[in-house]
View 1 (cartoon, one colour):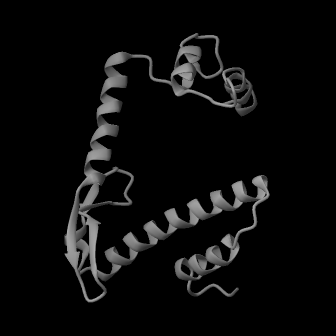
View 2 (spheres, helix red, strand yellow):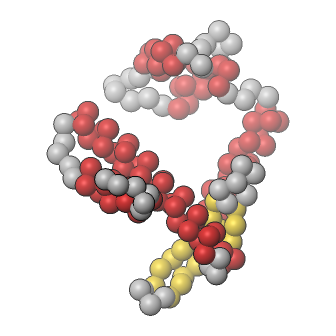
Length: 149
């Protein structure tokens, strides 16, 4: 993948500082466009991929109200299994499994860490003052409790 060429192609599609995904698809439909090979052009295959994506959204949308000693929460019924298979696991089935519970929380904290890192980079580019580094340090200590700071 030539990221430079793709960036140029995307830049050509910007209008008034905005980029529409629909415009990207239209441009990428041209087989000579650098973005062309990043799309599934077989409609049957693309439709199946879209349905899988919709299924993932549906799975992640299911919540259940749970009351604990800490409070009442709406929590996902299914969590990403962390396996390469893309399977989801029922939250209730790992509740009593210390290793599986820790793995699930670590996956969630990694997502938090990645979002914070992205926010830090954006904050740096936009020149806004934040305390993101301090929050990242706390998350890092949670993810890697044995690491020395």
